[in-house]
Image (cartoon, rainbow, N blue to C red; front, top):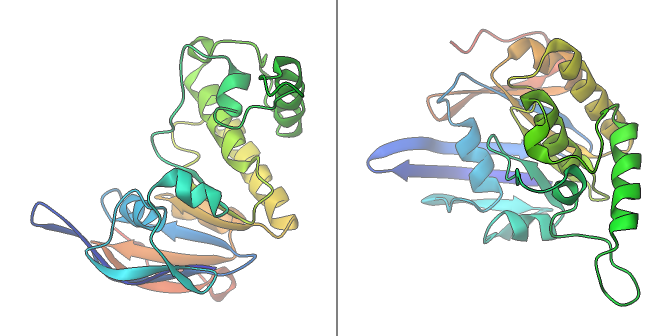
Length: 231
C-alpha cells in the first residue's frame, strides 16, 4: 500500500537512508523500530513528501508518487503524526482538531457548534477528558500529545502513520494510544507505528521492521519471535 524502493537520502554529506526497501501492506499494523538517529523519522518524511529522496522511489497503491508535502499525502489518504506535531497554542482543542477541515454551514461559514460537537464525540471515543473549548496552551504535555493523536486518527482513509506517538506519555496514556491502534486495526486501517521502544511494538503490531544506521536490518512477522536488539 505504501512502499519505499531503494531509497537513499543525504544531508550535508551525511547519508541518513541507505538504499532502504520498505513495504506497508494493506491492513497491517507495522512497527518501524530503531534507536534515535536510525533513520526512522527521515523515512517517514520521505514517504510523506517532506523530503525528496536523492535516489529511489516511493509507491502508493502500487503507483510511483511524488508527494509535494504532508497536505498532498493527506489528500491521497495518508494521515501522519510527526514527532513535532503542528499544533497552535493560542487556538482551542477543537480548532486544532479540525484545523484546515472545519465543518461549515450552508453559508460556507465555519460552524463552531458542529465543530465542538464533533470534537466532543471524537475525544470521548478515545477516552480523552478535555474541554474542546480549552486553549491548547492550558493542557499538560501528555494531553496535548493525545490531541495530536486524535487529530491524526480521525480519518476515513485507510492509512495512518504515527511517529513516536507515545513519547513523553505516562503509562496510562500509552495504553490509550494502543487501544486507539487496536480499534483502527479492527476497521482494516493500515498503520505504520514508529518507535524506539521495541517492547511497545510487540504489544500492538503484527509486523516489525528494524532500522540501524539508515538501513533495514530485519523485517518479519511479530509471531516469528523477537529479533536481536537494535542497539
